[in-house]
Length: 287
Image (tube, rainbow, N blue to C red; front, top):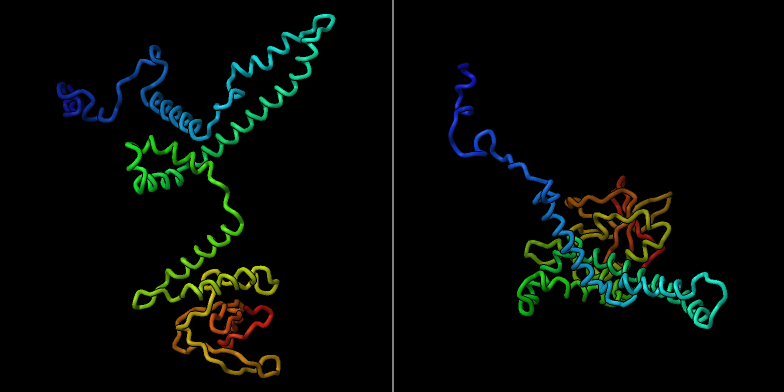
């Protein structure tokens, strides 16, 4: 016998599907069951998801959503008002109501499709994470499993009134201020107060509508930090002496040339000139 066939991997004995056969699955008989066990599990998962979406959206709740009802409402009038010669009173009545039935059925189908789409969006990964947080916060007290809680939670989200423009504006402002307050000082306190954050937010919203300012906003740093230590001074610009502000020479803050930064103390934007290391007040917008 050759040396190759004497190697351990070719010796008889041992457990089946081990060694070089590790991870190899036994061939499944598709002729009897039609699909693999993995495919069956995936199909079951998809069907469960569809059932949850229908439960959340309420699709199918209306009698007009039922396929058999739709058949009776559309095919029935056609049978009664068929193409036979002559016309009866019943045929006239059916002919009058059939267009309305068709419209009602079509509208209901559109509603179901729209609600299914919205429900599917609510079941996206990010929304599922929100649902799990809600379940851990208060859902466990009412439902024994997350699967029971999910349709109720998502349906509540689906039926929640849309946020008004004012509410959206307040939420945007709150989130913006929270972002500013992530920077803290050596004591762990935010370097920007809530009132200062409101000023910066209001200034940014106005600046976005200003032709000069909107392209000069620094997304990295929208305001002049206190630690920049700017002080009033004068400089010659275009042959004229003008009021400017100079940052502390020991400041390590990087400002971008020809960009504007909001000064919360003076409540106005300052245009930074890198060559002279100065801030020039912009008078076109002031809070």
